Amino acid sequence: MGEILRVGFMLMLVAVIAAVALGYVNSITSPIIAEQKEQAKLDAMIDVAGSLASGELTFDSLSVPELENPYAEVDETLAVVSVTDSTGTELGYLFVAYGKGYSSTVQTMIAVNTAGTVTGNTVLYQQETPGLGANVSNPARFLYQFDGLNASSLLLSKDGGGLDSITGSTITSRAVTNSVRDGLDALCEAGLIPVSGGAQ
Amino acid sequence: MINSMLMWVIVAAPDGGEPSFSIAKMMAIIVSAIFINNYVLSRFLGICPFLGVSKQLDSAVGMGAAVVFVMVLATLGSWLVYHNVLVPNGMEYLRTITFIIIIASLVQLVEMILQKFSPALYDALGIFLPLITTNCAILGVAVLNIDDKYSLGYSLINSVAAGIGFTLALVLMAGLRERMETANVPEALKGLPLAFLIAGAMSIAFLGFAGLGG
Amino acid sequence: MSIAQDFSKGIMRENPVFKQALGMCPFLAVTTSVENALGMGAAATFVLVFSNFLVSLFRKVIPAKVRIPSYIVIIATFVTLVDLLMNAYLPALHQSLGIFIPLIVVNCIILGRAEGFANKNKVLPSIVDGVGMGFGFTLAMVIMATFREILGNGSWLGFNLLGESYQNQPMLIAILAPGAFILMAFILGFFNIMEKRKRGGAK
Image 1 (cartoon, rainbow over the protein chains, first blue to last red):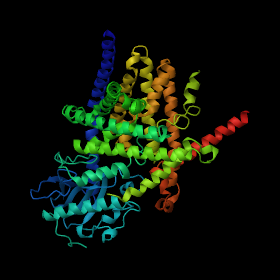
Image 2 (image 1 turned 180 degrees about the horizontal axis):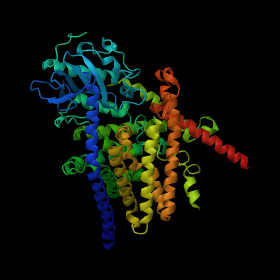
Image 3 (image 1 turned 30 degrees about the horizontal axis):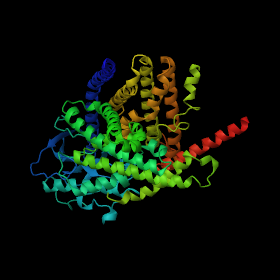
């Protein structure tokens, strides 16, 4: 019995020391991780919003009561940020589209002007197949096509639209395209941007 | 200038709140875990037993059964501990260490219980159990269930399907290797290289499932 | 055995991947790019060195009966450490290695060295053994990733080697799952031939 207690105590000791050490490291790294995530998001926002106008921009999170969340299946809130320039003129909006891709939920940040035209975009997160769907992160492969489009023209050529999907990655391409279109439709419905067809 | 309300959390696959159970999602999880993202042939989890225990059909079936069994128990244990102990206390960073301890103790426990109450089953599965602790498919399923924000029900379904996918790959592999035993292959490719070639061919076949579901 | 031998055996003679077929899961999964291979190699080497160090340091204190669970706890601690540090300072790499960081815990190389070497040897040789094995593992992954990234993406460590036209129509299979299995078969076959040559020469 004494043997078992001694052995059990040793194992406990190892586990406790490990947990304490990790708790300490975690207390150091967790603020850095949080800050770094926030920074990455901010950088993406500044980068994407830069397509709306140059110069100083102000971001403000919007809360529109009647705004329907098109991503209810993947996230509980649809966060929309309005972008205004230094004179207070509203230039457009930023939002993150969530699309269920092949092996992950692809998150794309979109900048749209008040006329409802996509002006900029960047992929925030994806874990798609390297060599195939992961190419979505390379703007020259797919997302460059989004700029200048509005909700009605965001459709893959396979689905009757005019966008060429990434070779071998229709699922990823479709997920991104449809999720962005859903987001734009929601903004339309909330009256933030005009109904499709405003700008061709 | 930057308002702190802009807290969009960037997470792997947000699956808001407690989703209602849908048959469609369940089927999607099952098809994905067995075929599209087969744990062995596409996600590369559990390669060691896949290569080590696939020389004979009998042992492949035994190993597969043991893995499904432990996988479900490990998912149950790790999911409950993660959501009821670690998350409420803000100790998510202890996930890896907790899960591996849960898996290691479960394997021990299952081994002792089987030995005592079902010697027949123990004889069949016993030798595979110690190998399972270091089978990364088990820890992989436990971690992926958390990363994908599955509810307990979906997690259990995912773990059963992942186990079946593992067993499927293992049994197919064993069947092929048994046949290859007598085949005349180049000297340099005998043994492990041939096993990898077969796995590659199987993996190509499984790529064909990519269009399913979606 | 000398310190130099402790170090070098992990790289060639007892290479964990090519000679012992250990650590296959991360080896096959993260070798889609050289950058990932280096990241995983560094993470695994870090864990290997520190777990070897601690296991060797406490080899007389830890009771034999709870040896393995203790090793697993030690290894899991360092894996979590790497996980947290990488997430804080190398977020992009952390994201692309994904689930394979926590899975370093069940990398058989690490537990294998703890049980097979650090357990029986003094502290210094154990550290050196960890460094050598870690290097061997990293080297193997970089070799594999070199083939896969060049064939499958036309680049090496992100540098475009084969030009835009190749990158638009690369040999995709190399970077996909089957490519990993098939390339590994050829690499192991190559080692078999080399071994046979060497043995033939010695006779």
